[in-house]
Image (cartoon, rainbow, N blue to C red; front, side, top):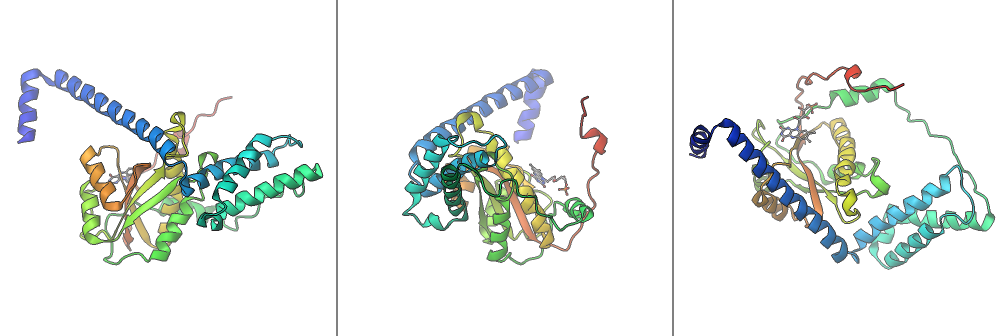
Length: 311
Ligand SMILES: Cc1cc2nc3c(=O)[nH]c(=O)nc-3n(C[C@H](O)[C@H](O)[C@H](O)COP(=O)(O)O)c2cc1C
């Protein structure tokens, strides 16, 4: 019915005018969405400023700045006082929370102690330690990267919670802007919820009969200022590639589901089903499950097309 209507309108007003109308209305819709995203970013940053997880994120940022100063070639005493004060402030704010057990809190505490020791001694100990060996061969790494595939057909069995936690954990081991580590996975293995979430994703096509696990890959937007509002896409995506590789080692196939085309209604259903708070940006979605399937790799462009070397 809708398709017939579209065809009639196209015939009446012409292809070019239709295309112009579609482009203009898409631009307006996306601008409205972008403004709404900025509004959420400003509002959530103010409103959640006492939430321990938000403070822990701020702590990682200040810990990173002090840490970078401690490793700098041009290190000097009396430098970095302001970031150190901020680091102390965030540590103090968290000291009575359960998050003191978090490894990133402990790391920040160690950075504070190291900063204080270097200031007291007027020099640094053990600066510039050598890089540890990876213990893996280049070809092993290349095989892992090149054999990973987007798989859409799975065995009917869930993934153990310990494995899910291991996969979520490795996401934080990528580079992230200012060490923010914003990514969180909202996961379900409830078959009805998996099916409901999949129905919200336009790209969820060509999947087999069972899709055991659905995850929304989300980024906490509160540690970002407006100018940085697109960094969560980069931070989450770098971590996600770690997870795809580790999943492959576990025999778990994963396919990303694009989340750029969703309607406000689809967004609301996904957030309600997976209990995703407003301050989390949905970067992409995943379907995951055990698989023994292997499919041919889509052809890759030549390395020579992937770079430009400027003299
Ligand atoms: C950002 C992104 C969005 C994607 N969205 C979808 C999707 O909606 N549906 C789907 O079936 N595959 C999706 N994919 C998977 C790609 O089709 C797949 O990665 C690509 O064809 C290369 O194949 P490979 O992953 O097996 O190497 C997506 C991949 C990325 C990186």
